[in-house]
Image 1: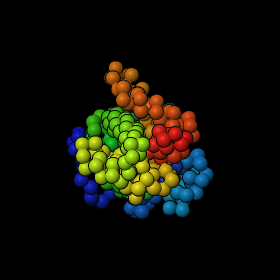
Image 2: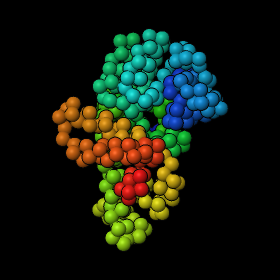
Image 3: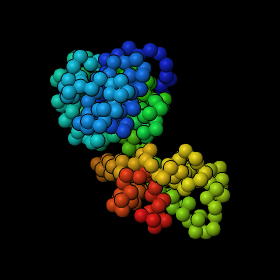
Image 4: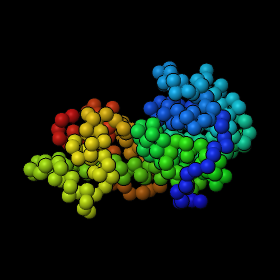
Length: 306
């Protein structure tokens, strides 16, 4: 049902899965499918990614075409819309009729809808299912899947997705998952930038980080960016700020998503000035060398340290 978080549980019925894209997110996701008892054949252009996935029990194919041979489900986790369209265009004719294609990449809505259309041309079920939760969520199997597609595709995908995630949300038809993901990450980028600004201001006004955290985390300024991912070191031990800003979600990926949100806003004539400003700030952070750091490290730029 649209807009409803599906409860998890039940046995998966689709056991032959192809996984294309075994990087920082795809590799752990594929490993969780193996751990759940699925037969997983994977492929990535990176030999390093293939080697890591093989250690987790993924059977590494010689090509994408080899990976999808006989598969009931194909999952793609790729960098951009053009890669998804190219991969689905190449693989859809090779996948058996009635198979399910799931794209968990974060891409533009238009490319996602074109991928759905391509799948339909070949008699395949399809779902866009971008994720929230970062590398840690991928490894722990606690991702949120934000899904778009027909009801039957969503129902078919759920037993597979529940082995990789904690929450599965059906947002609507083709491309709706991508649309919701971009809206969510626009909020996240803008909120993190504002949170980082506030902690820098607090420091300059003589407040300790802990004192400001104790107020904000229990007051009207509260947000996930403060309580779960505080950009200032100290109050949230598990936050990247306490681990040298090692990325759970890299600044380069945040910039990518913010750019996608602005492209989407332009395409429908939506006014998103805060999202646009967040995109500009993350562009500065990336150009200053912060792209490989966690996106919360934007606080370092605001402190004048990058």
